[in-house]
Image (cartoon, rainbow, N blue to C red; front, top):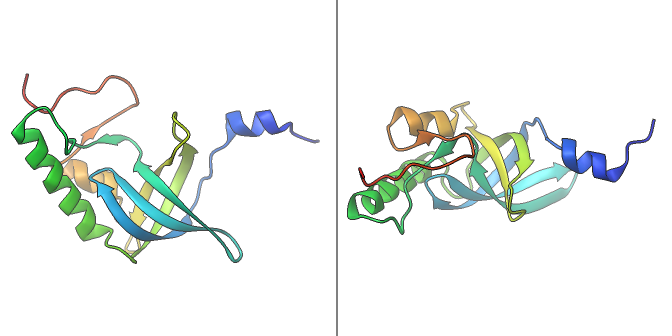
Length: 135
């Protein structure tokens, strides 16, 4: 049975694990990686952590901006440049500029869950985002 390419796009999700090397931490919930997608084939892409939202560095108040720096430092401590991570449940983001995935460290720590446990992120389902400034 042959599947039409348009059906692939609608159903496409890579379960992983996909090994990747961290290139840089963009912010608390986004990293840039070089992922091994096939034998001898690497791709560089930004990965947004699925299921979470962290404060923004350009937030509306000083408290949000400071919390964003803490989330970024937390992520950088667990996903330092050149560290090995594994991507799971990879999908394209709604803007087509990056992917969305769960990221696990080489030791098996789920980065998104760790950020939530540290109170540096909130669960996020893709809908409306609540502000971080206590409004």
